Length: 463
Image (cartoon, rainbow, N blue to C red):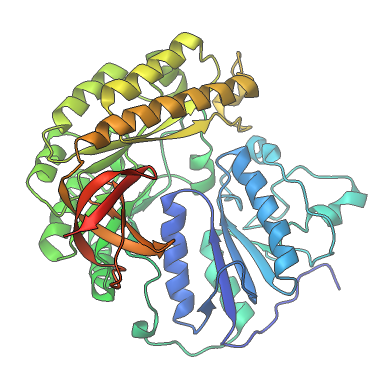
């Protein structure tokens, strides 16, 4: 070989495995790709089945995500020895990423077998690999993490080259793989929080037009979806002064009939009185907000570059309680540089005061090129682990208190799938419910009485 990967034309009936790591934004992109490639006659399979192509929409927000990617590729090499593996997403960082950041994103290449090097187009737009250069005797091995590493905007072109000329399939032939449709309305970020590399990997803030979003939601509705989730990196800054998030929600309510409309993760300050009033008076809007809170300590929030205080958010939470059946979930980071025991206890107090249904806990991950990476008083991994465990227990107890008030209530459940002889689904306020029924309930909106707490959610009985 001449050092460049060969593009192989594969049959139209090829099998594709699409694996997604990371946030709902990545999941939304993967859903769009799956449909786009489905129109070309490519059949989706799961990772345990033999496939011709494997696309990994990878995450690089934490060191853990990168480790999981490497482990997954090694596993796939053993299961799918003939498959071409393509890595895309945030791991294949964009040209805008600064050199200081790129030098810090490391990988440990898998061991044999030997694989082709990346294509002439480079590593997702880079002329050289976006990783530390190794001595010459190791460089060939270093390039063999995957067959191709390509940016999101170049993925479709690469796939079409790989599969050759194909005839487009009718849209009706592509069946939804989920019950909730994730619709990307925005990408990029302008916040540059001290710990985060997302603005470097996804670029500056950019929003889709309201018209194109409405059109996509209408298409999801025709496909039979019962719920749409609007996703983006910073929904607070969607659109512009005239066409903002509030405008988009009003237009969606007017121009679509989809039963449920949900928002993904939000900066807490994205929620204002106008948004609260809209949710109070529209049952199609899911009364669930996932707050990108990150800490319950004002000192740590300031170090992170988050422009709000705990007192402001708790005051806002009190106003939000006017929304019927409201549920709140949140992201929290433990072990940020300089976090003392006192700061951590303040985070615990916030979880209890805000009455959170669920918390997503992240141990701070040092990302070279970010401001936090250069901060003093880095926290040990042992302390991060201990605080994570403590916070998880606090979150579990807080969640049980929230759930108690829903016992014996009748509530609507969007049924997703069946597992261990039980159907499982979510209420509009994000309660997990398990149901026993001989009927086919997938993608159905079913009324159920919540009988008892079970498996982190509820065991329910269909009405």
